[in-house]
Amino acid sequence: SQDLKAPMNKLEAAMAESEQQLKKLRKEEKEFRKAVEKMEKDLADLDKQSRDVKAKVEVVDSELHDIKKQMAELVKQLGAAKKQVTAKETELDQLRNRRHAVFQRCTVEQVKLPLLPRDEDEEMEEASQGLEPMQTQPGGEPSSSQAAQEREQRDDRRAVRVDYSGLDDEYKEDKTEKEIEQALVQFQTQLRALALDMDKIAPNLNAIAKLDDVNTRLKETNDTFNNARQNAEDATRKFNEIKQQRYDRFMEAFNHVSKHIDDIYKELTKSSAQPMGGVAYVSLDNPDEPYLAGIKYNAMPPLKRFRDMEQLSGGEKTVAALALLFGIHSYQPSPFFVLDEIDAALDNVNVNRIANYIRDHAGNKRDFQAIVISLKDTFYEKADALVGIYRDTEQNCSRTLTLDLSKYS
Image (cartoon, rainbow, N blue to C red):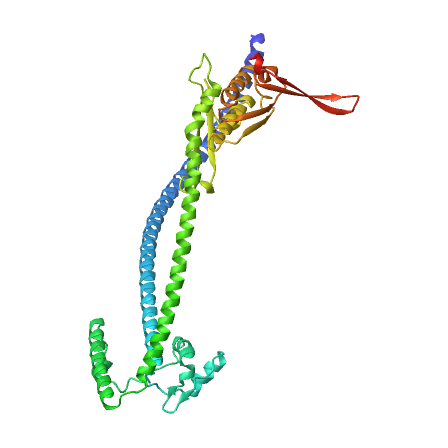
């Protein structure tokens, strides 16, 4: 029993310690639960606040959408208002032009308009703006020497004010356009009647002379105008003729080259394995005025897909260039060709093709003669004659040797 007492005491001590720790843990658990409950409550509050904020945001978005819609409507109304303002300004400018035309016509026809007297404030304002005060004749009329030059400037500044007090009351009221036209016809009729009466009472003996002078000046002006118009028409016609000639000549050469270049390129590239040869064609960047833009030249060697000219090999570019050269030459042939080492980038197969083409098209009664500079025997062995250049070391100069190959062909 003495041996069991010690372990029992130890176990009781351990149990007491465990109970103390359990109490401590329960206390901590209780505190943690309180903290969790508080956090859940805070989280619920935050969730509620978040929903409230989202509701407010939706309300604000709705209001913002309405405001944008209202702004769009206002912008639309503003645009319509601007159009109306522009229309009214245009109408006002037209009325000002008509008013100015009436003033000019009155000046030309020496019609005296009833003008309102000018006050000193207006003259001082014009003087401050750099305008000369309008000189008037007795009765408030502008001087005829300044009328044509100053009426427009004074009219724009509203310096000319017509006195409408002499008009009947019916003409002072606002009227429609149709009523204004009717009144204008009535005034013109009255004017013609008054003019007839004036002619009967006091005929103007100088009218015929003035009319003859005006007719003479009118005829001179018409002749000058007709001559200028005829000269302009002649210049335009000649320009168009030259332009058409330039176009016709260019298109004649281009169509010829476009027609023959494919056959020439096929002849330079065909073989027993590829009897059809390659394909070559030219096209215009600007068909309406081709001489103002570029010309595209494309060549597709046999068994090759379409590529830009820059992507072809050196030999393929050489063959394509020779085809274009022979095509241009076929339009207006020159007496002979000078070809300087055109076979430098060609292999033996293409050298033979080029040599055979030149031999078939050169010589007597053929398209052209060719002088070829070459270092390849497969090329110059097909020539009619050879010219060799060598250095004479004894004389320190160059010499030539010639060999006629026609008797060996």
